[in-house]
Amino acid sequence: MKKPFSWWIKWVSSVILMGSMILTSQNIYPYNLAVHSVGITGWLIVAILWNDRALIVVNACSLILLINGLVAYVIKG
Image (cartoon, rainbow, N blue to C red; front, side):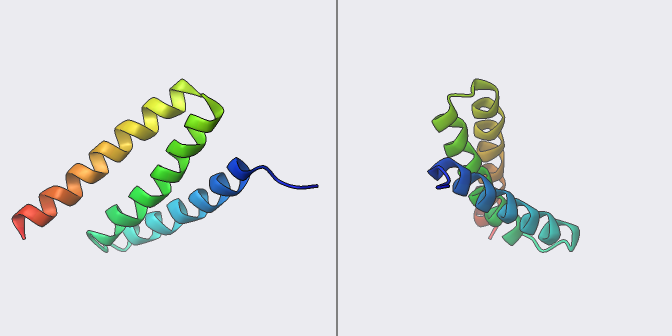
């Protein structure tokens, strides 16, 4: 049985998010934000493919906040 493309994105993104949680728990900043952004982007793609508005809103807002944190880190340099 062949898995749909969204299935792969969902699971790879979930593993990436778990990795970002490990980075956050070890206070490895800002890499935790960058890795988390990749995982959230994957889930945002899945949400769009599924046309799930609640997931789209949650993941879009999360991605914006994470990118804001990364930009703030770069600006403070």
